[in-house]
Image (cartoon, rainbow, N blue to C red; front, side, top):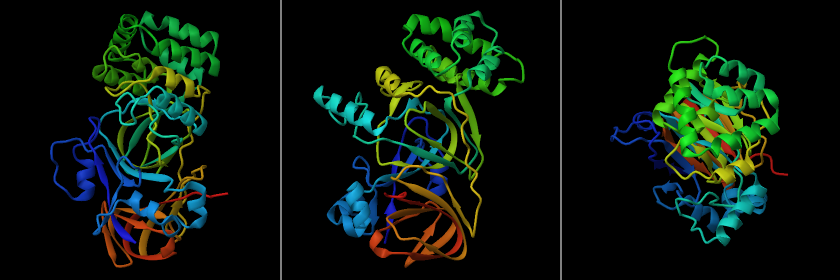
Length: 387
């Protein structure tokens, strides 16, 4: 086992203070959006004190690092753990299934798009299911809302430019209708988007009914950041969810979503495939997004796991990863790796190492079960059930 140095990602939506505070470091005026712990080739963590890349260590001896069964199944560490800190909303986005990722990756390879090109959508051949677990109050958009509930919210936005949108939903209040509406919105011309979004944002900024107040405030804020982006209206079609600390949300392939604000622990398959539909200065790929989005209305399942003997286990219905939160108070035993554990509160001893807030450790499979002591909170990421 060795301590693990995370990789900071400075994106414009990141918080100036949240991750620096977790790590006990001074702010530097830059937005610290994500802290990556893993073996993704674009930003692998370094082992301390050797400064070896985790992806190189795993590739050099996969049986020791992963165990023979997981090494045979995946070939590399199949998950990526992050601390995510959003001061402003991320992009409107969805992630592909494995089959969609393989097809998209091959298509962009054939077109000669470099892997590191800013206009590349499929950077690998993997899917990217993910789970976000709140460390602070965390607000997100997740999947399409029931159309009738959306109509009730749109009814509180007093502008005739929404009449065609309302009419479309009334005429076809199902997944096919929502999919057609999404395509309509995201393929509007710049002039038509301007004519729609401006009045909607203005109407959302006026006092109104308690019904939909949060959604109107969200749309007004998004419109201030991204004027004339039809993603503002698209956001009004999605479920708005607020997680309290310790609560989590699982997002599968095709789920159109958007993180709005807050800090959380995020775990995902070891992929960087993000298909964006707007509300961002980054690359937007509307055709690819429309190909993968699942517009079936859902009621997001907020996870509130019960803590048993100090352990709360989150539901992660994929083989690539698992996540649990451990409230350490004395002695606790962690199951055999491969695993990455990060301390989010207190001080915890693992073998010869001390983990204070923000510190992480790599636990290879060959170490077997390990004992932890101390007092604090530990998030432990591992591999899911491998058939």
